[in-house]
Length: 512
Image 1 (cartoon, helix red, strand yellow):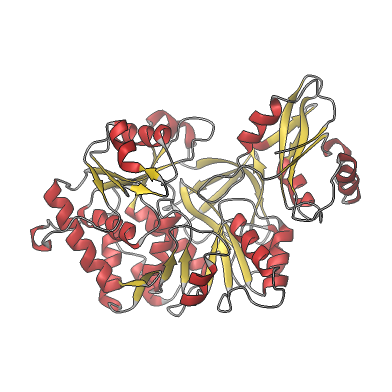
Image 2: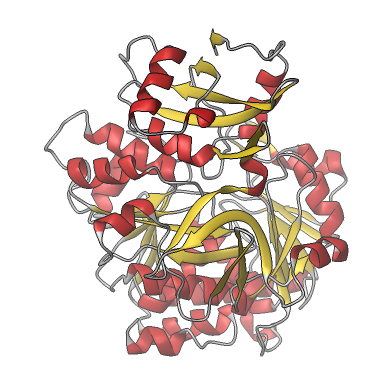
C-alpha cells in the first residue's frame, strides 16, 4: 500500500474517506456505466445534495434506511449520502423477494425503504406496499435533492453500527450482520493491500452493489483513486462490450465469473477476450486448482482468489507475486491486523474488519468464542508460509460409517475430469452408512455420457481413498446457484436428492 493509500486508510468514517479522496483527485473518474461517468468530486457534491434531500424527508443520524437497488451509479450516490448523514443503512440484494425483504424490514425496523420501482419485470414498489414498508421512495433515475447548507455536521466517529447486512438465509431466516464504517474500511484496505491496484487501473463491479463486496470495492477505489465500471446486469458475452470499451484491467467476482470468462476465451483461443485485462480476482466460493491453471494458461492473465464472508468482507487474499502453487491451492494470506486461529480444524477470526455481531444478541453470543474470535464454520489449516487452505465447512463434512469425508477434496479432483464442467459433492441420508457420498455433476457442452464407474475409476487413479469414493452420481443440466455470487446451493441439491435416495443403493439418475 502506497503512502497516500495508507494515510487514507486511517479515515475515521466512510464519508471522511470519500471527502479526502475528492480533495486529492476531484476530476478523476470513480464510476463508469454505459456512456455515463462520475468523478470523485462529483460523487461528493451529488451525495451532499441527496443527503440534504433525505434530511428534508426526515432522515437523521441513526435513522434506519433500507435500500434494495441494482448496481447503478445512483445506488452508490444514495449510499454515500446516507453515510454523509450518519444514517444506519441496510442494503438488500435486489433479487430477494417477500420472504427475505419482509424479514429484513421487520428485524431492522427500517423507517425508510428505497426501491427501483419496476425493475427487470418485477414491481418492487408494489412488493413494498404489500409488505407494509414505511417511508417507501423510488431511487433509480432520480434521487432526493436539497441544499447542503441545511445539513448537520458529518459523523465524527466510525465505530458505531451504521450498516446491517444480511446473510443468505438459505437454510433458515437471514441473520442481520452489524458493521461499522471502520470495519468496512478495514475490509477494503485488506483487499487493496493484496491486489495492489494503481491509479491507472480500471476495475469492475459486476456483482450486486448491495452485497458486502460493494463497499469493500468502493473503499479500495477511494484509497487508490481508480475508476470501476458498473454492470446493472452481468451476462456474458453481452457485458464484454462494456469491459472492452472502458479498458477494464481488473475483473472478477467469484469462481463462477472466472469460469464464464474462460468459456468466452475458449470461443477464440489466442485472442484476448478483454485485451486490457491483467487480473481476475474474487472470492465468495471455493476455487478448484485446475480452474486457476486453465485461466492463467488460456487467458494469459493473473488470478488471485480470496476468502471473505458477510461477517468479515476480507479475510485473506492471494497476492499477484505469490507462487503459482499458493495461488492455485490456497486462499492467500491474511493482511496485517487480521488474526487467524485454527481451533479443532475450524477457522476463527479476530480483527478490525470483523463485524460487531448480529441483530440477535443470542446469535452474537454463539458466534464468538471466549477470546473474541469469530467462529466461521469453515474448516482449514495454515501453511508454513502463512497461507490459508480451506478444506470444507463444518456442515459440509460427510460422515460415512463414522469417518469424516471432505466434500471439497472430492470436488477438486473431479474438476480435473474432462467430462465435468462443475460439480457439487453432498452427503445424503442412508440407513446403513449414516450418509452416502453423492456427486452431482454439470457437464460441459459436447461431453460424453458420464457413469458412476467412470467417476470412481478416475478418482481411484487420482489416489482418493476407497472410503471416500462417491456411491451415487447425478448428472444435471445446471447446478442451482444463488443470484449474488452464483454460488452452488447445496441445500437445494440435498433437498431434491434426499427425496429420491431410496434404500441407499448406488444409483445413477440423469435429469434436470
